[in-house]
Length: 389
Image 1: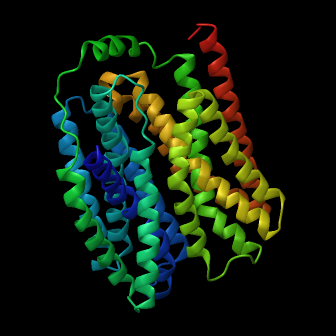
Image 2 (image 1 turned 180 degrees about the horizontal axis):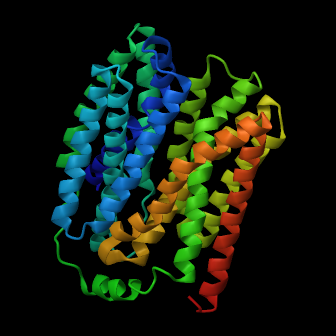
Image 3 (image 1 turned 90 degrees about the vertical axis):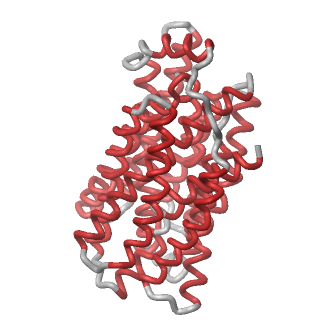
């Protein structure tokens, strides 16, 4: 089990923690040293999320374990390669293409990696599987990229040397990620076959609709918090040189939070855990928009770190349980909504912020949508208890 845990953390650290979130601490350095504009940085982020969306669609089409393992290997290798290639050019078009590939590769870690781990857990235990330990790899990657960036900056690394350093770090993590991955037989159990036959009618059900829309709103909440929280702080003169420390705080809080939400789900219920995590994230957005002092902003960052990855982990766990025979397919269905939100969220927030000349209104609206997402979980629970879905 320890080897599986190590592999899980390394997979998400490579494909998302470094390949995606490593871009966050390097972005201001690229802007000052490589001539990357503010708008261009936003477009590179959008290119990454577009690649992620396409990768989610591809993940949905994969059926056999062999296909999924090949895509996972591709995702790991292309994540490492795309990280290194960022250091080899200053062309915006090349950067955009590389970020697209990095986003595409990230779907292999989030969807395929989580699906394979879910399948392995189902084969090894009769108790409901949980994925908190797997998604802790995102937090580990955020912390590693933040600490590495601080080390690189103190040693006067240039922007391209930052990327090369991240590439070396990813390459080191590749060996445990791939060698210790779970080995799964491509033969579904009777329990999985029965569940798969039931899941075919679930796609357009009230249950699926509630979870899908909730996860779309969660995607909006994540991208608005992750993209504009520091911008809001700068707008209020809270954060200047210590924005990287705020990012590290998010990573540090997110790791233990995943185990906390797994505990909540096991001790109480999936509904209570997911409802609480969504409500907590909504509170972080609403508080940061309404109150202007630094203490509340600090609390909102803590609530964001405590809640968002928990929402992702719980939702992916729920998706895997809905279709044990092909957990990755169910995860891809739901993640399509999340990925779509990642693309349109920054654009809509930017337009509204420019119109109202403040980030307060779009952040407040996003918090309201997160509340709606929490209410959708109440609706789902209501119908589940009455056997109507």
